[in-house]
Image 1 (cartoon, rainbow, N blue to C red):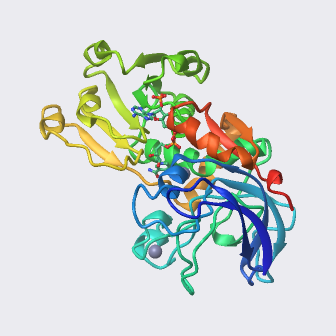
Image 2 (image 1 turned 90 degrees about the vertical axis):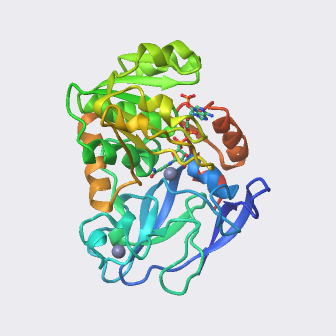
Length: 349
Ligand code: NAP
Ligand code: ZN
Ligand code: ZN
């Protein structure tokens, strides 16, 4: 076993603090990755604070992992020592069910094995994520980071990137569609970039007036402040598509009213409380309310290659690991521009 420095939450009420974990030597089909950067997702906060229930402690969060292959098992065919690779939100699945076979491993009927806050399929040991210096993963669940994407700016693509790319593809965003992105954080800023790259006309709906200029810099055509009630009157019935990335409870009905007839609103944010839905919000304009969970391995690779081709990468603020608790507090206030990324060299060797 390889003693590995990490940061962990010991329980739902404690700040993250240094912790040592053990990584296994790679098995025949596994690679050992030296982690360079790990993005900080709002899901890390939800889970470290047990807001969704069922959290496993101690917890080492982190599922936006990039680094270099340090060691490969004897039967590994896809990767070599030195390759630049990534790991996203899951590290295993059954591989046999219809969804795994279709490349939608995130919907595995036996449950995907989450990169952290999950349990290994064999043996049930807890999984530990990317707030650490290395990780051992089956090669089938490893992504190749294309040349040309700076590594720190690639990390958030492994969750925020695929989570926003997948529903735009699946629900069929077309060039010329009017797309609204609700919440300009880690997911939201990637939704804007992908929407623009796919030819949509993008509007950012935000609680933070201070993000207006950034929305334009990201390529959005328009920005509207959701604290201004006039916004909801002015934009009623305007959008083909809404991507909702908000992490806290908010009124879905108010946003559904902004869709055209036959428009689709996709929920990506996972607030910790349910929100009432009026049937009329859907019925009166034949609207659709949908959801989407990250994306499969094949589609994640497609998204990474799309990013390299279209010059898309995340806008990041790099932090040392000892700034992680402050970063969480800033994210809870919406003060994120637009993804914190941990430089894991700050964990020591
Ligand atoms: P984030 O970086 O913290 O961004 C969330 C944004 O939502 C904030 O920056 C803020 O944007 C807005 N917001 C926050 N509180 C709000 C409130 N009370 N009312 C209105 N707007 C508010 O978070 P993230 O990492 O993008 O994650 C967003 C959500 O997606 C989380 O719930 C996370 O767990 C979930 N998630 C889901 C998936 C999936 O597969 N579906 C994957 C990853 C994450 P403004 O300042 O612009 O208002
Ligand atoms: Zn995430
Ligand atoms: Zn499966």
